[in-house]
Length: 205
Image (cartoon, rainbow, N blue to C red; front, side, top):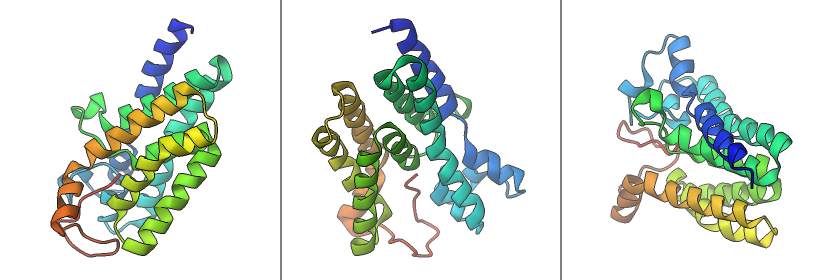
């Protein structure tokens, strides 16, 4: 493996992923600092609490796209495995952005962006799991956790490369780490359901 390309992909992917679109878009729309409301996260779910569905949707798309853009660029120049590492690094940048004191989002949209652009059948299968879980149980966090749990197995089933499977596994573990408070509430029966209008609802992106 080209170690210069690997380092370049890690740094470049991280920097692209660390662009806090939720914060930028809400400030540009005159909605203030998203870190001062709700869960204080920069993800799309917290942006939705401003009442601007259009800004929340744009945040979700851009948070997913930044991982996809990093992946596609580095895949074009250095191959599929380096591309996947760049996408995974964008996930890290979103969750731990240096510009915001390493306090970012929970990575769900960026996770799906990495999957969809890196191996679209895996991304579609995981998105389908999320949708089914969300429809049946109405918990956004639970849907993300179940989709993340199955993602490495689905990648293996679709014959993804060992590096891609390894990267997906690491990201899936981080999804669980980032959702530790959601997991506690799920176990306690206190996690808000999708559509519940509660100030305490916590962001899953």
